[in-house]
Image (cartoon, rainbow, N blue to C red; front, side):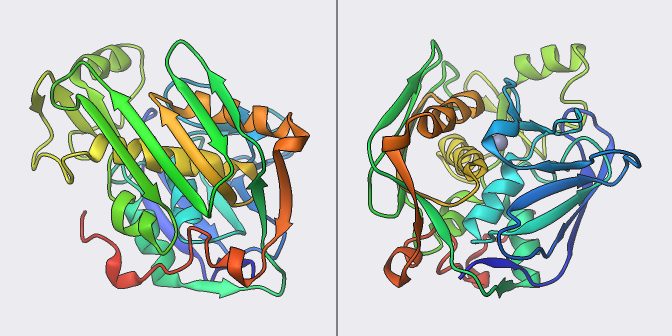
Length: 306
Ligand SMILES: [Zn+2]
């Protein structure tokens, strides 16, 4: 069955790029509502922004969605990953500014907040997007592919010149709460030189050594070091899960990201939906529903960080 959050969950923090205080409230929503954001700081006009692939504006640093009135919400990917990974299909998310709070730079605080409220089942079946044929997109930066598979599985490869990150590969089957156990606590990462140039351009003003893993060559500058030796590739998979959830429904297929990022995953969804023979909307029976990422999440398995 479709789900929503049982009661409202509030998150207070700052925007990673704006540095401005931000309050976000995930509220219950009815079946077939999907995930939508509402800008509560805007009084007039259309202030609801659907978290859908065709509302995504390609930006290099985060996933930003924009509605027809030009109202935007930035950095949605970590809360989207948490909703996908906890199996929440419907939610109205109030936000009092243009950017989702970054919290600790991972999705763990969102997962903890959602699971503390609990999941409510609704009287409607889940529809999933079943991948029927491979689609692939490529840019100078890398490539991303979706192909038919059992449940949702992911392969990711990254390759950074900084020895503190280097080359990392990970494969994961997202069934049985794997997102919560293996991905949700992995934080955003960047290089010190990127931080310096972003801040010169008025970006990453809310960034700290606590809400991002900052590296310089072979050194990890964030106190306490890494949460996982391969935290970087885990975070890229977290981002990909969040970005894939802008499909508007859970995806059943195999995703591969080769040095991919927000832009490539969005281009991949655009390619998928432009290829009618590559997918179909499937009403989930018990067998398919058991393969969805949010099934089997246990509260006691949420990593104890931040
Ligand atoms: Zn991220």
